Length: 250
Ligand SMILES: *Cc1c(COP(=O)(O)O)cnc(C)c1O
Image 1 (cartoon, rainbow, N blue to C red):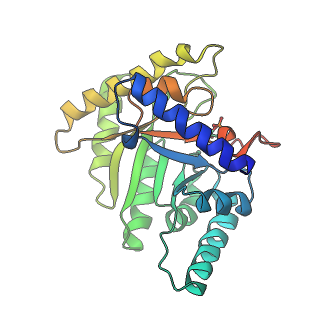
Image 2: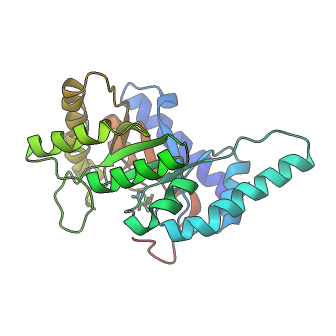
């Protein structure tokens, strides 16, 4: 067994255990493999082991990797006369407006929408390409100054932003995303995850036509706490690919 395979088997067991403890079905939790800073070969190896959802946090890096990986998979499929299921690519990091065009072309889902202005730019670009883009709104639940994301309060301001965004016809709002603060004990992240779920539940009442099924929360150090609080998407890098040698921030 390769190190990667060992990591994935181990992680999937820990996800299943966390789901069972929470009385949830592990199948309702999507694992996004966060491949930032790792080379295309690592992504292809994870794909071969069954991974279909990948997360990148920088448009520049994604522009180099995603076409290369998709092309490689397509070539392999052609050689073997098979049809190919391309990975679903998630953008999970802050997007600068000058990278909107690239991002719409590269990604299937943008989890890191952090302003109405950005949503409008993405919508315009998606419309130009005749594409409907799946999105999540990033919420800065903990209020840390270093973090991107909508402030959940004042609530009327946030709800007004959501109202503007659900009106954009080439975006499909699927739910909320957050990055919890780094804490000593992962259970200390739970109140932040719970706050995101409660915020989603309130939005459902405000926007009954939008079920907002997804809560993207939980990473290598805190995914069990996130699953306990209702995560439907977890974003895990290090527990799959190993420690990063560069931070991959941005
Ligand atoms: C890097 C990153 C992750 C994955 O973090 P790990 O600690 O490697 O699991 C998840 N979400 C976001 C937004 C990230 O930038």
